[in-house]
Length: 164
Image (cartoon, rainbow, N blue to C red; front, side, top):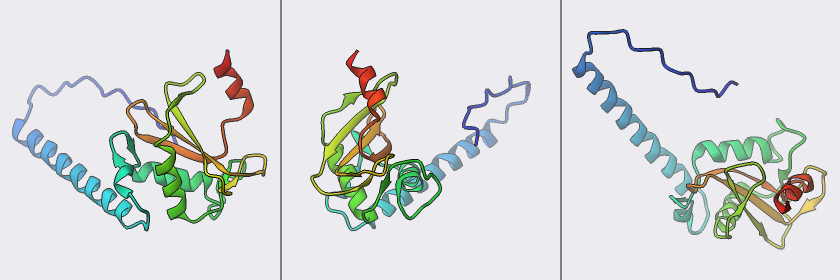
């Protein structure tokens, strides 16, 4: 899937219909608000304490990010076999993400994003090498939006880059 943003063509329409444009704008805004409410309702359905922390600007877990995390890193979804896999229930994954977001952010090598690493002390899943791990890494934007999370830590070759 190509996620590149297309540059819109120059507007050659000299007849701008403000009324239609405003209707479309308000429809999109209302739809976006409705989707936001649906997404928050979905998070509230999870049996997780302190769910509200996942909806803060400082650590926002969108349904898109959660779907990405589960598609790539949940053991019941076999789409990405070479990635670390969580072997705990979904509510526990979300709880670990919430708890990891309370950790101080660390810079990432060659990336504008931040990482937060939490050692839970209990097995969460397996890293890319198949080793059982007790740590979770959460990657966020500088604005706090959660991008992804996975069991384990960044591979050593990427960690070495941050030391230089």
